[in-house]
Image (cartoon, rainbow, N blue to C red):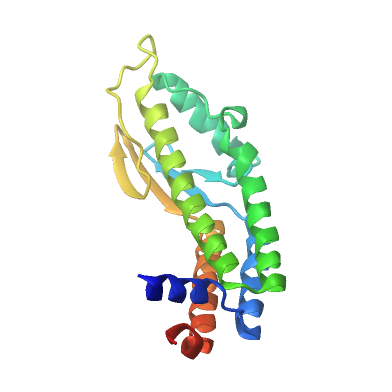
Length: 212
């Protein structure tokens, strides 16, 4: 037992090498892109809209594709009203209030890890990152569920409660709905993988110290 505790203490006390610190900085800086790139998108196709209605979800706002004659977000909300679904309004998404702050916190913690250079801080950052990603997906799933199940029974068209797709394709009434991650999500995955790589490289560099 004492040997396990000693090895754990040694592991968490490992000082990160230069390569790992640089990788952590790259991971932190990459997260800045998530303030400008969409994280997820839903696209709806039907006979009325063969070119598709596109809704893009950012970390701080909703955005529909726009053309001189059409705003996709307004069109989607009009369809939602027709079947009794609540309008998609940014003020109803509490996630838009905390996601930007959490990402900013992760960036600052990344710089702290690069400067302080300890394994325990890197592990804490990686665990927080994984938790944030998992919680965000759950929150998105829950929001989709509520929008698809809390329908107005007095709507012009009555449809049974439904679950919009979190990922992939689903047929809903006369619409084909596609839901996929956008570049912002891939940036977050990239940053998470970079943190994992930094951890592995630091562990390899200190292998003898940890194994003693």
